[in-house]
Length: 355
Image (cartoon, rainbow, N blue to C red):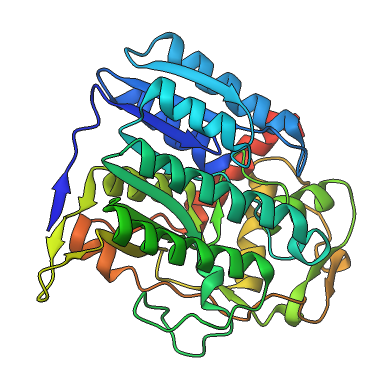
């Protein structure tokens, strides 16, 4: 059972907005809630083109202008403890969705320090603030990367995840451990969500579908890792946001164990489509949709722009989500297929870049 939360009239803090998932979540909240306040917090760093974040922020501000929900944007870093404490003290958020994090497996190999700053120190600051300014529910982003080289598929939240193959994965597993300890010690209701390869319009340019599109549009070759022998559980951003929204409304209940001591109000879920796609099939679908949208010409020579290469450090050959627990507890399972999702991306790309 979950403790039901009515989001209307509440103050909701979304860190990592106007990042990709955060912006889409805030747009849903502004469009559906009848009252309350949504606070967006982001450092707007240059890990990828800041113009994309500015674009998403402009969409949020446009939506906020006609929404009954108040929107406040704060530019800052969750690693800044004084800032985080000040936000909690001034606004007293009832629900916190922590999506702010340094993302990317490969980037963590060359830039480990930013992962420690954002994903560990930053998340610790959020937990400490939730401790001193109690919240009804803390929802935070974990990642399918925690499964590492797990041979058992599909990946279940019951699986042991003690062998990360990248620093990024290690920081996300650390988030889950930290949240568990804070839930146990201070009865903070917290739910971690392991996202599986999120994609869609105005997404992250470092993600394969986006970077491949940019290279193909520029006439450059795309590298296909592990010689194409990869499977990914791609999840369209609207499915991710729907899952996050449902989880926000249902917090883990406070319960007492057999020893009479309180059990941590803590949970972790996968959010993934449960239909891993072969990377080469995914690329073929992307190419077809780029041609359909007019991003690439109909006679584009794709074979001449492909290069099969070996596996990258930190990558895994397969990701495959078992989302049955999410479906059981929240009545939701991602369902948007790659054809529909990539079509929306290709149409957005054409419009945004005037390709």
